[in-house]
Structures are given as structure tokens and as C-alpha cells.
Image 1 (cartoon, rainbow, N blue to C red):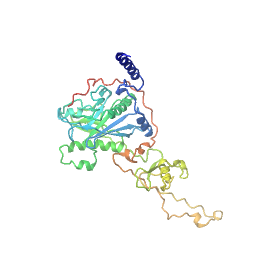
Image 2: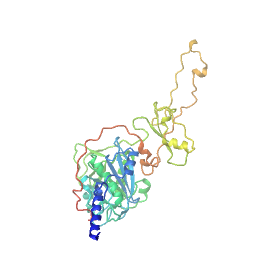
Image 3: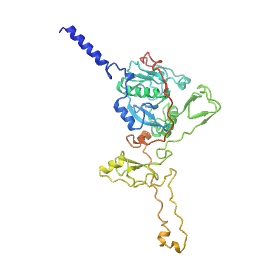
Image 4: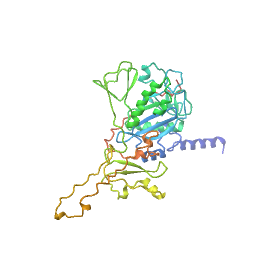
Length: 412
């Protein structure tokens, strides 16, 4: 067989393999989620098409993706390591400073770039209204693949694929835009105090307001810009239009979103009881209510069963009495029966002991690390079943990458 003929046969075989499902001809932007990602979504009670919310932390080099559930709250799905970001702590100010941006940004389907020179990308939308009002310049600030950055957040090709596909699925599921909150670091009081003398301290305090709002409610903050400042969680009186970012703020009222309470979601109260173990991941969730009598073995979750199999003592199930978040519940003392010959009983039976105080299980508050998604250490807090809500509307059809077909080679 001649060399030419052998080469032709090999080429034909290669083309046939490329045409098979999962072959190399599948564009990265059109791939399906990896099976392990689909399994993790299912374990956390999430849907691939549900809305997403993204947080970025420079100092920790982390990007978080949160997914919405039927109760309208967002629950932590996964934290991805950022391979590279450029510049230092602080916002991007001008083109050419090679700073990665900080602030509150919005991504629409048109900002998705399937043709990026760095595998896949989405444009953060810098400069936003706040940046423009303050004279900040630059463009093409991306979250992309590879591990090089000159103002962007580089995630590696493998990680940007999963992040991109999660965003694509959310758009196809009906989400019209998603927020990206980019922070210099996790905005705790202790972290902010470390930078009290920094020139960006005032700006970071505003970012912290948005950070605290989400930490408290697990709902992305409502962001507006007026007086060249971010204004968070505000309703403007007498107008629905977006205020002028450079003009004084119209009259407004601050909105106080309902804080997220994993222990009381409008139904049976959920109690998280720590096991007598040094392992913080060993926990027990039990639904409290008359329908879950302590004698019912079905209320013992997997953690309690795991403790039993490990030979560890399992604490007694909590009382079936409803628990109010505001404080302990006092058990009512029954009134004594009418006194008469027909009701002659021993005194101990007529008058129950009033010296023993009603025992109320102590509410166990989560240990906050990186947000409420870590209350159990491995996402078990995401398994709290929310109340049913309305089904999302019909999916919205989008075309991707219309604003970014030239790629993202232009770093600013």
C-alpha cells in the first residue's frame, strides 16, 4: 500500500471519528456540562437552567457561582480558583493600568464570547455606569480561559468551559442578565480594618454594603448609580427610570430585604444540631413538627446514620414542640381538673410538677466562614428544601457573542 493511500485512509478515519457525538468537532461553547457537574447540581437540589450569580475575590483568587432555587434565594454551587489576575487591590481607573476591575457588573447574552482568543470568555461590562460617571476608561475586561491576564480574570480553559456553560444554560432557561460582584477581598470587618489607611477604603466600604446585603439575604443587591456613587437596595419615589449617574439622586427609600434564615423558612422549623464530635462536617438536620414525632426513625438524616455506623453517640432528637426564632418556648401548664369525688386522684396526678422548666432545644447558629453556603462544611446547608414557588416563564431565545465576535485580544 502506498504512503499516499495510507494517509488518505487515516484522514478519512479521522473525519469519521470527528463526526461522532463528543468528537473534536464540538465547539467548546456548545458542549454539555460534565456528568460530575450535573450530579453535583442534582445533589444540591439545583437545575442547570436556573439563574446564576457570580462573586469574585481578588486577594483570595476565587470565583464563586451561586444558583437560584424556587424560593428566589441563591445558594452556593461551586468556588473556582482564579489562575491569574493582574494589577493590585483597587478598582480599574484608566486604560492601560492593567488593573482588574472591582465593583458591581452585569453580564447579558451579548457579552458572551464563544470566539475568544483565550478559549471562551464573557465581558464584565467595564466601564459600567459608575465607572463612566467617574471618568474611568478601558474596555474588553473579561473572565476568560488560559492563565494570562492584563486586566482580566484568567480561569484556565477547563474551568472557563464549565463557567461559560453554566451561564449559557441560565440564559437559555430565561435569565436575561446576571450580576458579577468583584471585590478586592472577602469584605469582612476584619479584612476591611486591615486597609483602613488605603486610598480606596471609602470605595470599599460601599462595596461591603453590597457584600453584606447578599450575605444576609442570599439575594443579589439591587444596584443603582446616582451622584456618581453606587446606591444599593433603593426604590426611587415617583419614577421607574434609571437615575442619571452624574446627577443628584432622586428621592428614594432604602429597601430592607428579608434576611435569609435557614432555620425558619415559613414551614417546619429546621434545626441544625452539632454532634458531639470534633468533626465540623458531622451534623444532623431534623424537621420539627407534630408530623415528625421523635420516635419516628424516618426523621434521622444521613448524618445521624453515619454517626451510628461510626460508633459515635447520636444526640436525642429535638422536641416536637414548635420553636420560635425569637426565644425559648414556654410549655403551657395544664389547668387542674375540677375538684370533686368523681375526680379524686393522687395530688401528684392532679397537679403536675411546675418546678421543672420547659426544655427547649437551643437553636444552633451556623459558623460563618465564606457565607451561609458553608454552614455544614460541604454544602449540606444547600439541601434545605425551600417552599414551592411559581414556575419560571418560557425560555428566552438569544444569540451569543454578537458584541464580542472579534475575541478579547485587546487588553486594557
